[in-house]
Length: 326
Image 1 (tube, rainbow, N blue to C red):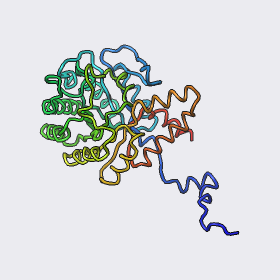
Image 2: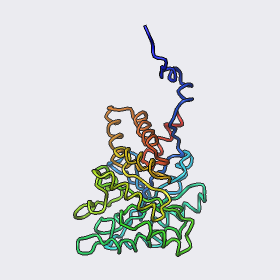
Image 3: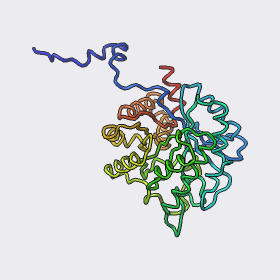
Image 4: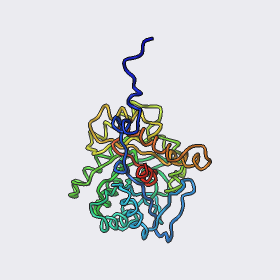
């Protein structure tokens, strides 16, 4: 009776052997933690569709970021919910806006100990709920570019480290880079939501950020989930416009695009494990269908394995605790 010369199970016989040959690693240093801050809020508000996720009053932001930092997570992504919304999203580029106040407060308390990233979009700030400026029931791409650039500059004034445009307007990276450089913010980096897909996985986020469109949908400016080549064109366009980090969004159903981006381009790659991915795991675990720790780690490892250098994830805090327990 003959046996195969190679037995791969020899590399799995003990925990220490498995650790020695482990090919993909995961740590809290890989995570970017989203933070929602709401103007004029007095106490924390639970997001019903996202268990354990809350909207914070400005007064709680420092404590929250302190908790995130203590877990070893190096970066946050700020999202703001303003009191007043209008057709042009003017509170988004107000130097005294809620996001700007949060950035300033975090920078004052943490300095360079935390990478402060902030979303650059209009959906939370416009009365229409769309990511750009509406003219005649249509997104005006070029007018929106001017506004996105103003948002980025306003955030840079208050100390943001990285601006993260998610509006999916053509030319948004170039417009923002030019505006930042013109104002002397050459060290502020851009992490673009380069291939942000028209996804059903965003629904809980729209609850958290109060940003559902008031009419129509976002099919005219977000990438169809059927078009892999189009997604790569979006990534390549952002690189040509001077982006520093590209992002694939969502993550779990788009691992092929993360892997293809890693294969094609020599640039840092982020993946956004979005609200729907989080809500599905939390819901299933609460019903006893899955083990939350095990499935969370498996999902995040798979995103890293596909080629992501960093992961924006609502699991950031819980996954960091899980990893420290392992």
